[in-house]
Length: 297
Image (cartoon, rainbow, N blue to C red; front, side, top):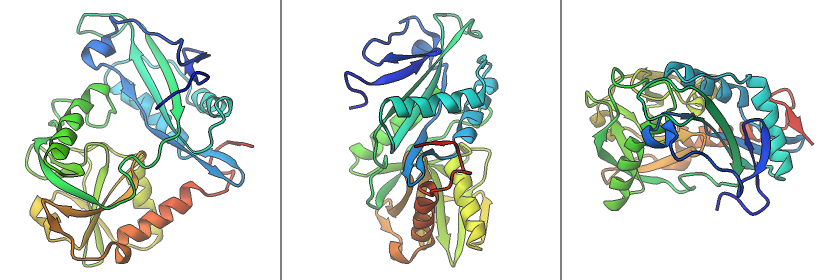
């Protein structure tokens, strides 16, 4: 699904065949989840393949590594250039890109001695599909910000996301909605939450959620559209009384939410602020403008 016989990945300074790449089974990342990663999207435009906010993603990858004391000796611009080259060598235009920084063999609970980087890419549609989602409030909560580095996109953090997602699907829902440890709205397993009420857009404040790059983009677009946005702490009851809601993330893009715990939102999705932002976001990421990012023909 993710690679073919001739697929290339970038691995520690070289482009190698995905089938031939290997890593050590004693890696600290494999045993303890001590690694960081990113999710990035490339889009086909009239002026060539464009990777949306690629520098911001690699800046966050670097920041994630630094937050959890993983050495990061890679230059952001070098990784940007390598990623475009990877797409070109694999003949990919619309693609999902996954960089992973992982640690060397180490069974100790200490800083790694050496780290590696792998970047791969594959064709992947919107992660949560294109239909409105039926959510359920998860019995799992997001980790407390004093227990982990919330701002870091760490491999091990996503066990929480997997548990919440599987619970939701096992109970007949499309996806989960997680609260924070104090019972306030947080986010989805892999996406940020927005909801609309009386023409105002609301979203959980930073501090207990991952600061999503797509979330930041939605905030920018809302400002351009002169949509009022409020960030704060909100209980689930506030969401249940909202007019509409949506998730957003690099993998999911912008996707509408039909219901939470079987309670449907009263506004038709096509009439919602989320639908407008979904359309504007789609136009933005496919914009044929070379000044947004480096492109290749």
